[in-house]
Each structure stands twice: as C-alpha cells, then as structure tokens.
Length: 419
Image (cartoon, rainbow, N blue to C red; front, top):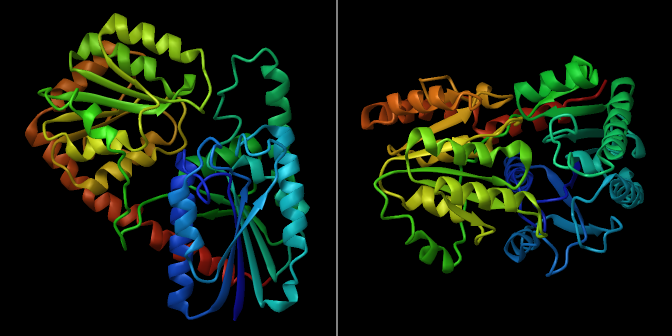
C-alpha cells in the first residue's frame, strides 16, 4: 500500500506554544514510527500557518526537527495575519482552510492507494467540507477544545458576535461530518466525545477515539533557557510549594490558585503565559499576587514550569485550577516523571475528573469552596499518600494514556475503512 497522510495544525509544526502543539508533535512522531513498523510506502505532508522568526510561538527547534524527517514535507499556508498569529480568528480560519484545501486538492491522489487527512483544532474545522472524502480519502477533524468550552474572548465588546461566528464555523463542520461518508471526528478523551454528542449533536457513529497521552518509546527532550536556573533560585529554598501554571485566561482560574494560599498557607508559585501581547488580566494577577503574597511569573522562558517539576526536591502540590478543561495534559506529563514528591490536585471540572480517581491517583477539589479544598489537600499532603498516589498513577498512565498504542488503533481503523 502507498499511503499519504496530510496532517494540519496551527501549532506543533513550526511553533510550540500550547498543548495542541505538544500533541501535534507526538502525532508526527507516532504516525511516522507506526508506518515504518508496518513497512508501508508513505509520505506525510505537514500543513501549518505561516510563521516567521518574530512570530508569536515560533520554534526553530520544532521546525528543524520536522525538516530532518524522511518522507515528510512541510507546507506553509497564509491565514491572513501575515504570520502574526497562527490561531487567528474566524475570518482567518476561513482563509487558512481555503488555502490549505487548494493545496491538498492539487495533489494527484491517484498516486496513492489511500489518503488520510487529519486536521487539528477549530481553525482547520472548515476542511471537513472543503475536501472531498471517499473510501480512498478519509477525513478526520480533531478538536482539542471548542467554542462552547473555551471562552477567552468573553471580555471583548463584540463577544456575542464573535462567539456566534465561531459556533457557526464549528457547527457547519459537525453538520457536514454527520451526513458525509468517510468523514469523522477524533475524540481526545471521553469528556470531549460526550461534549460533542450532547452540545453539538455529533453522531456517535462519527466518533473515533484518539485519547491524548504520553509517548513511552522515547524521552521527550526539554530545552531549558539558561535564565531558568536563575529564576529557580527564588523558589528552591522553600520547604514546599503549590505550583500552578496556565495561559492567562479567565477560565484557567489562576486567580483561584492564588487565593487558595490564604487557606492552604503554602508558598505559591504561579506562571502565567500571554499570547505575546498585553492582556489586562495580568494586572489582576499582579494585584492578587501582591495581596496574597504569591510568586508570580509572567511569560518566563519556555519550560520554566517543567524545570520546577523536575528539579524541586521537596514536596509540592501541582494544582490544575481550570474552570473549563477538556483534558489536562500536565496530569499525565507529571505522572510520567514518576516523582514521589508531587501531589496532583485538580479542580473538579470537565475532563479533569475523568483523568483523576479521587484520592487514589490524585485529588479533586471544588475551588468554589476554598476552606474545604485546603482541608482536603492538607489531609493528603504527606509523604505516604503522595507516594501511594504516584504508585497507582503509574498503572493508569500505562493502561489508558499510552499515546502510541492509542494512535495505532486509530490509524489501523482508518486504514481498514473501505465501506
């Protein structure tokens, strides 16, 4: 069999600034490894928005890694932002998809026995109805979040108008997929599958499972800026800490993580990342951090949080405080570290409760009740319980979140799709 795989993503090909990018990089590695194991003749095309060296999120390291891969070709597509934003808005999404579809439709598919086109997240959703699907060309959209989950633009004056446009963009894709053969949606977790069924009316028969997870066949390389060790000096002297890090977005609830310090009493380290531009929410973070007495870092060198997780030797609470979260990649990334000094705590919301068996391999709390949350954390923040939860979590991560095994099942199902 001669196979062509088209993989489209706004992050993870020539950039790396979000969880989507982390997973896209894993997709590329896992797909290539599996096709090599199958002994297939194949080519992988990677489609990314245009990024320049000064573009937000651009990663020369990521791009260079992909340029070196055999049987892989990279295509850059304009989305109307001239490289300023890989994600863009609903108008940019339409431009991006039309330009990508033009490139893919220009490929002579008769050269291949099978073509699989996989496009990640909302910006590429329009490809579902811009590309013709058939038993020879299978199409899969993989949303890593949705407009109904993610509400970062809620403070904009024209929020309602923008939200309507974004919902219409996603809904049109779902409607087309529901009625079109050989066209599917990949679900990154059970929560996302149920969300798409209940809130977008996606048919169950159109869902393919591709649960996010870790790649165990290699140790992912982390690149640490020399400045990180200097920042770490401010933290390493604490006897214990609470660590929370996320995008500077209201739904990520970093403010809640800071306010928890009043009840919990642990030195609290907060890392907030913007999208490269001033965001008024940072002023709120600074005010609360000063009032409560937290160590707040805004846009420190990339991987600062991972450096802390790998190098802080005393007991630590890792808190995922999100109010909305389809799946927290960091939960399994920390489990993979296999460290007996990190207690994983998550707000009992969305897909986070799917990932944690409360008090067995982590802790779920309700941050609407700070006193009870602090009380529960204190109960389990001891050497024995942290070690036991870590021990149990090692079984969970291998059984459910081995991404290579999940990816193999997903690709095999697509290769066998003929009717």
